[in-house]
Image 1: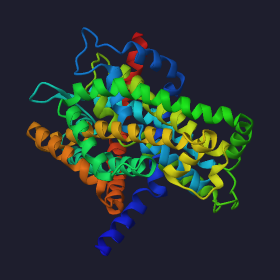
Image 2: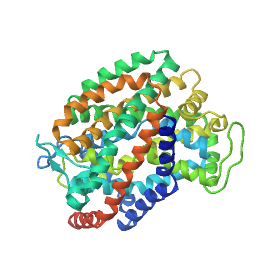
Image 3: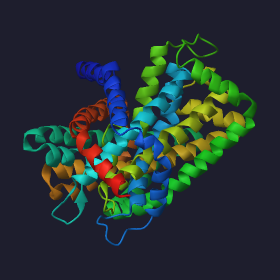
Image 4: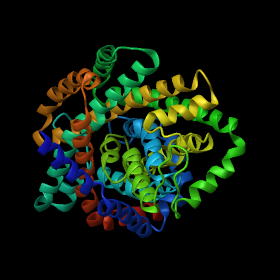
Length: 447
């Protein structure tokens, strides 16, 4: 077991090391330049399309509305990474890590736009008549049969990664947060979550879409209001916080209080890695959800889909990071969710920690729902629609085990597989980028 642990540790260091981070950032930058910075200049258009996409179009085909597809994607990405991930990045890389998270998100919008455009453009119908798409289908239908091994690799990595990163790790975070804050036994959280998750995902993407569209906007807004209260209480510290962020993105920061100090490379590495972990730009998952959305245009779907990265990182993660830096708790020596809780508690004594626990629970729950769909489509690609019901049942049964298990190795393995998903996806994005550019030009020439 120790050998296996060391082996996975070594692979994880390689997968999330500088070469991968350069590949993800570099791909995003190349795509952004090829698109002439359209994802940044058309953010307003994307929000307008999202608002109009709350209902299915009469002539459009798909299982859920474009808005529900975006909320399903956000359900999976707005999770523990927005609370614990941001805090970990600042703990390990200093305030400058937040700057590099922003950079990851800005180029990641181009990556996610391309992922969704290709997923929708190359989607197909399964034998139940439902639309399916994502990197594996873009590779199969866009690059041809000689590349199908690449799509298969993506589906295998995603099919297994989901059980860790999107299921057991999430319910484990929920269970421990509820036990610490409200003394709820781990097994109670596990069983309760299993029942609710089962009621939702056994109804398929239509029910997931309805629940996500109801829950995600509310949870994001409630969290942002709570974080805004923290910032209002510490309003005089906001200018200094931005100064810290921009200064230490490019200069080392010395040890202070419980903070051990960090080099610039640490700020870049942990900012980029946690940014990608949070918004999943480059991993290819967003296209899987958007492919089920009703649409007559892959470009319109892409402009709605790219907003997931903007909302997740530029808005939600920024509020968490600013709350941690403004309150000064980043020098306390705490890390992860405990650091974020300390920031909220300092501004709202007696209720701040409880509020953050509730947010963590809701974020983690929706991540389980979103990732259940991603994993299901990966297994459907590998073995067909006969995999759907067995997958859903196994997914539901895995939930209580995640709540009570010691998951250090499962987390490490899932994190590694999660990173490996990026390799086939990024290769296909670069190879199929001319298709995206052509579709984008044609769309804007008509509009």
